[in-house]
Amino acid sequence: MYKRILLKLSGEALANEHQTIDASKVKEIVQVIKSLVEQGTQVGIVIGGGNIYRGKLAGELGIDQVPADFMGMTATTINCIAMCNALIANGLKAKVFTALPPIEGVSYSYNKEDANKAFDEGNVLFFAGGIGKPFFTTDTAASTRALETNCEVILMAKNGVEGIYDKDPRTNPDAKFFKTISYEEVIERKLQVMDISAVELVKNTDLKLRVFSMQNLDNIIKVVNGEDIGTTVGRNL
Image (cartoon, rainbow, N blue to C red):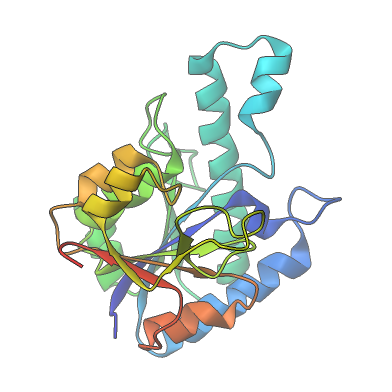
């Protein structure tokens, strides 16, 4: 169903309660990505940094938001380098593009022309460092990079929920599930799917957003291959 995708993962997807990066979790995700590549899907990935650093820590230490945000961007880079090299170890081509100054031999400075060329050369791409500026989250990075590299869809795998609800289903048994919903309604209802600034970027485009549970990582493959699971968000839905 989709030939080029942007997969948005939380940093916590790589970790367990004891480790910032759990080898078994990384290996599971690598196998999913490998399956996608082998069927001909081009994969771009944005990973959060919450397994390494969270904003709460900055507050506890009295760190201002600007340096705190750069700490978060650095954390995303660590996750991307780990995942990228795990893919390479499994026989895939992969590159890390960063909005921060690149690390020689490990990451490349991001620009959309080089990224699109790398896609066409068969690489899995990791977009690290957010958008390189404070006050923006990895949700905004996902929207921006997906648009710049002509992805057809953003896949957002969530912990503990099957898709988008009008309120948290974990604490509200009467929560309403949305099978489809428009970007405009997400904004109007102030639904906690992704940052509103990230939704604003894509609301008038043809880019789709698919939100689903990552309880089973095979859901990623199912969505790419057209199975109707989770919630689909788009223009005029």
